[in-house]
Image (cartoon, rainbow, N blue to C red; front, side, top):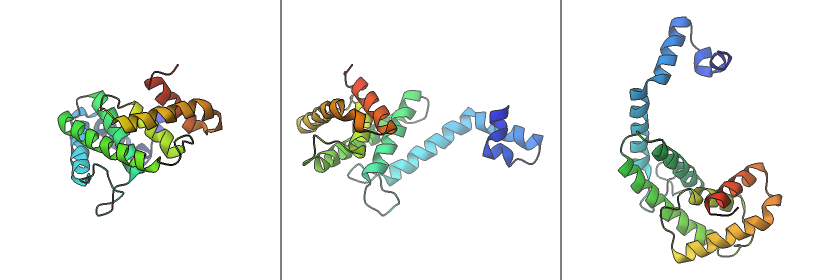
Length: 173
């Protein structure tokens, strides 16, 4: 009850009837599925030909935005029952190809010194190993995972968490 009382959409409700209506709306699975389908359609429309997503329509693809969207798509596909999973799978594959290309471009000089974005990439890519990487991407990916095992103590908390998940998904113990 306390948690519900602290949510912004409930605080803004004028009376108990409005609160109940908003709770019912939150739990309406049909509505939730419809909203998810609409969101996926909007993402499909905004995805660039290179596979990435921009911050805003008309801008070039953003590595960071694309990383975050792939995380969301992967989670939605794992949850299931969110509409056109075939379309989401194709969007994810195209996005991973974009990320792999950008990852290689970014890491031509500092393979042994992974930065925050590299750790984010390792985290995202480790959760999507079902989509094959090129031999070159895989080699850099493995080198950076090895570097992470040596440098993890220098990372901040979120980087350590991402690194731990990436290492686990990639078979490190």
